[in-house]
Amino acid sequence: MRTTVGIIGGGPAGLLLARLLHRTGIDCVVLESRARAYVEQRQRAGMLEQGTVDALRECGAADRLDAEGLIHHGIELRFERERHRIDFPVLTGGRTVTIYAQTEIVKDLIALQLAEGPPLLFEAEALAVEKPESQAPVVRFVHEGREQMLSCDYVVGCDGSHGIAQGAFPAEVSCVYAHDYPYSWLGILADVPPSCEELIYARGPGGFALHSMRSPSVSRLYLQVPNGTDVKDWPDDRIWDELSARFAIDGDWRLERGPITSKSVTPMRSCVHEPMCHGRLFLAGDAAHIVPPTGAKGLNLAVSDVRVLARCFAEFHRTGSTQLLDHYSELCLERVWQATRFSYDMTRMLHTQPNGDVFDRRMQLARLRRITASRHAAAELAANYTGLPLAL
Ligand code: APR
Ligand code: PHB
Image (tube, rainbow, N blue to C red; front, side, top):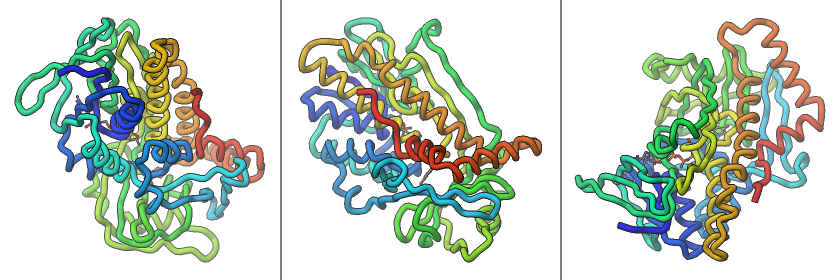
């Protein structure tokens, strides 16, 4: 097999890149190790920046998003039993965010790609990227029980945080900057209408809690839990009791309960791999960086990487110049580090630090009080949350 751009991974990064390249007339092939059904049911985040929505619209993948996505004009911060609203349009000159599950984006992009191309192979596991420094890199993969080769002009690793593309970077050029947090998130989906109109980020007595949603009848909620937590230790009533305690305010508000349809525990990590390209091999999305979910940046960063990369490829296709492609890594990394900083700050400000002292708690409170008292500080949060501009 031969193609211009070989894409490893059929998550949002790989699928959107394939769609953008296809529309520019650049041929590509996507290799996805999992089965279609698995990829389409995997639960992930669901908060889209305006730029992410725009990118999906521009490539004709937003029909269902436009019909079913929930536009949000702000978020609520809760702490010390008080509620404080951050109004995005007022603070950012009109920007909003949209709630639409990543799983649904993946389903929409897969349906389009299977109908219109380019080729998308499920249960095709990439084993290695060979000769990334050469003019003709090769992806070695297994499909239908046979080992095969995909010869490419360029390879893009969109294979997530446990992928193999990063491994093709020689040790002497790779720098990995990582931070593990001393807590995880227990996430649930529940068949109950959300108890709020906008997302609530709470610093409660027992730790952080987030109230999000998937639709007018499905709530998505998260609780900070210790690393190593087993979901079996969290029966439904315990989850609802703890959520209610962390969201409690002085005033009239109640968390509605309903049947829990899914429970999972996710550890939290920040990680950036530099550079994001080596020879003719590029990394995009979780393959290059991971953020804790508190700032809702993971999916949005994956989308911004591939928007930049698609523009670099389009420039090359149009003019034959590799000038933009040569700068892909620098073009992405500034935004990546800003999102890493924002996610880290949001996480540290809202989570209870195990073994944290009184001083830590007062610092958190001082940060939260500054955001709710100063328009300037609130505008800074709103600008980061709704998404910083692309470099290209
Ligand atoms: N060969 C082929 N496919 C692979 C391989 C491999 N060796 N390794 C991993 N994959 C596939 C995974 O099965 C997955 O479908 O690559 C895909 C990576 O997708 P994601 O993990 O979703 O990563 P990405 O597309 O970068 O999306 C960004 O944002 O909200 C965050 O973590 C969340 O998934 C989200 C991410
Ligand atoms: C989600 O809806 O899953 C979600 C929303 C906001 C976050 C994290 C997750 O910060």
